[in-house]
Length: 499
Image 1: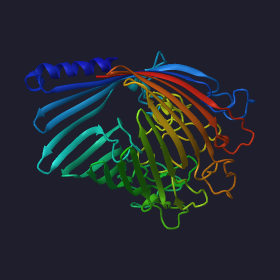
Image 2: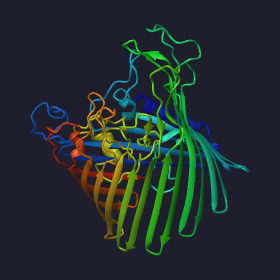
Image 3: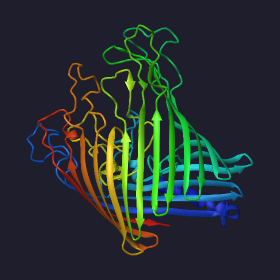
Image 4: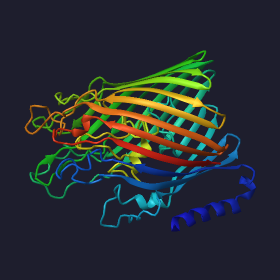
């Protein structure tokens, strides 16, 4: 709460001493939501299963609670073509849940020790926009997710440290950006067995991670197409160290060049959109080891994803079909990686095709490993070695959906989804013939039925009621044939105020 009052006092001082500049040019916006949850079986393990099966009682049964968040944005138009924007989130927490302490000097920050910041106030955005004859520049901590192309892969609302440029040439828009993902600190082990390698081997002070993107799009009446090429360059593990067993672990690097293509077109009442991405070159893991080392480099190989969405407007009805393919990693190709890159690219954070499966809100608050400060919770049942999370990796996904706008204020929606894994993984990501490595028993994630009702009480106040039922697939048995799974259902409602 102390941070909250400090933040408000800072805003008050800015307003007080900068009245002449900001009085007529400051714009405030915000969103507050309150969401109620009831989930019958988020562990996916039958609550009557004997101990020792699955999670041995952890997370079984039903749970119910409320969550909330206040988001405030402030835009200051300093001059024509010059804007400064900032944003904070406050009171993001479960109602009356125990607050977790911030890390002390002897602890490392983690998911469980940073919730207290999210529960109080967290300044996430502070950037400057300025227009020049060369184009529009954005510099600072800004929303870095996108609405690039289709809605597939979007991460709207999530932020990052970015430097970007964009310019429009009639219907053609071109942009370039750099995003800082992580800034590492190099630390060399003081003792090692065996001895550290010679200087220059397996060492480095470059322990950062960045993403670079160049994109272009062309729009016309009723349609658009675009392309983006980029590279994720990670050196966060570029350090030699010795494990607790005395085994040398050599520094490694990652370079993942990627390409994304998208197109959309409206044909009267028919709307079609498509997006595809591929990673085929570069290095997923490239060690800095001497040639005689047993460490093996791993390169991406034809890792691609594709999204197709078709809907037909029969006002007041709309019906549609969605298909998603995402290549899974073949466990028998140890020097190749064919899938599992969408999380590395920071995709799918706000693309929520279901209320349970691959839903960001559900992962954040309901999954056994999720919490207020962790948007990357998981759903695993007994598939603990390869759970699913928000990124849509390793799947064949089919959904039919429909909307009915009963009145200008009331909308009813329904969707039915079936999904299975593109590749059955192993328990430890090792080849099937490796010692102790077993292939998952099944590839089916399951079937899910979603029903939602949205009603606009005011233009700025919406109430939503949702219900979902998941027929749990045997993928969540993992490698244990004795696992007894159970279906899962969710009832949720949400009040959202925007201003």
